[in-house]
Length: 385
Image (cartoon, rainbow, N blue to C red; front, side, top):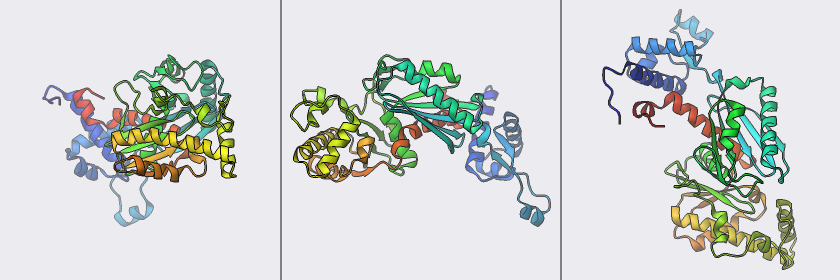
């Protein structure tokens, strides 16, 4: 921890500004007296900080309630944080669609948009679809691109800290793509790229099925499942960003691929896509014995993959999302099998956010970045983010 001295006036001003701004955002139109009490700063300091924040556009004087004015005569000035002073984007880039959410600086979503994309689309075409969706979203919301303060992006694959996709087999041309750099050219604001399952885990913890649980595994269930984990409320990426890549387990001496697992004929399913899998599950519900066997094999593999994470991390909660979460009958077999394999079976539930989970998590990452810039006193002192 850095030590403040009398020679650090600019640093001290920044810390005071962060403290007052945080108090303003957390309160309902506080007065200067309220802010002095909450922050412990002197009244002249708070007045100076508030005036400075008003000049930046982050704070404005709140409208006084007419009833209060009549009761008190001339009431004390009240202030509020201007969530509308900037905007954030959360984007999901998936195999079949690109979707985006637009929020204010408080994280309140105001608009959304999505468009389909061919799963065979190459990187340039997919990124052009991202630009199209964002342009449509901003135009519909009447928000200028210059208002964007940060953009979060959820993408399949192992993602480095700079936004480079080190390995991405789900999308054509994705491995080695400098995704963060490419998108920064379009937005000219900070762009934070995260693995899609990690982003979904963040979303469920923020405003979904995992709200209130700090040790969570989110499973993005699909043909090649992925997972994101929160440990003590913090996203666990691992040393190289590959934590949760449970879809790779079949490469480690487990030769049965999804194409074989889901076959009802004894021959590998080709091409294997989500529509094919949904058809197999539909046949299983109708009682087709081969389809029921295929569904059982698929669920068993998923259980083994999830159990590996559960045994390692001992989460309180496992949240199942992704397209496979919508298949009837997936939850009870998972609970039963995890009870067999795990020393302390976790709670198991379906995603509360559904298709919006990845984009919502990406939005939360953008919000975290802005909050880190505006409110993080410790990062200001230590120089770390």
